[in-house]
Length: 214
Image 1 (cartoon, one colour):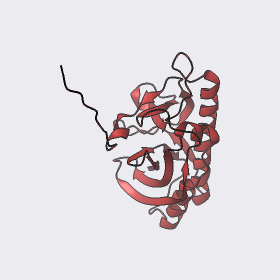
Image 2 (image 1 turned 90 degrees about the vertical axis):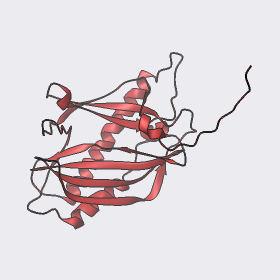
Image 3 (image 1 turned 90 degrees about the horizontal axis):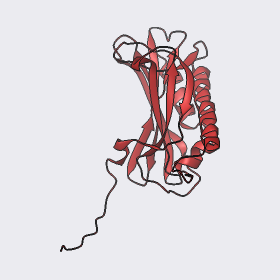
Image 4 (image 1 turned 180 degrees about the vertical axis):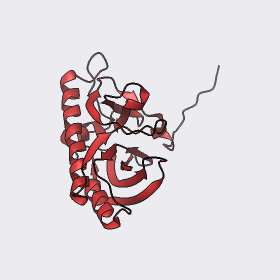
């Protein structure tokens, strides 16, 4: 038994990196070994999958998707069975001017029918552009478009996996390393408050201004 961890990777603001890491549960099995050729094909297709407009709107022109990694891991102990890392043929950048710091993100909450923390997951999509309304939130209509486009994007990744491994089906899932379970996602939610992903400002250079006091 196994599961698939996909990493969408990219850069932002020149010196930072970012990633999101959705998990997919195969309905069939890969067999005794995972075909490296098929794994490379899946990673390459995902690395070059079109990003829907609403996702690019929130990325900003200072954020780019630059590649993808596909890992097949053992369901029992999470050990790595197969891996492929592929670069995008051309980095895909956002469509609007940056307006918020690197840590800003819109959060996709992944919900399953499994209760508790082992049945919930989160994906932090870069959101360096609001636009924010007078209450400091993203409009409900805008969030609706965002979550619909994210569904389209994840469905496309499932299609890329299924094309590379035509005898295996795939379901978006949440992986719990505590319970070693991979329940399937039945709902995707997105809120209208911009959240933060702190580690997305690990290496961003900072300049200081100083005044003497008193």
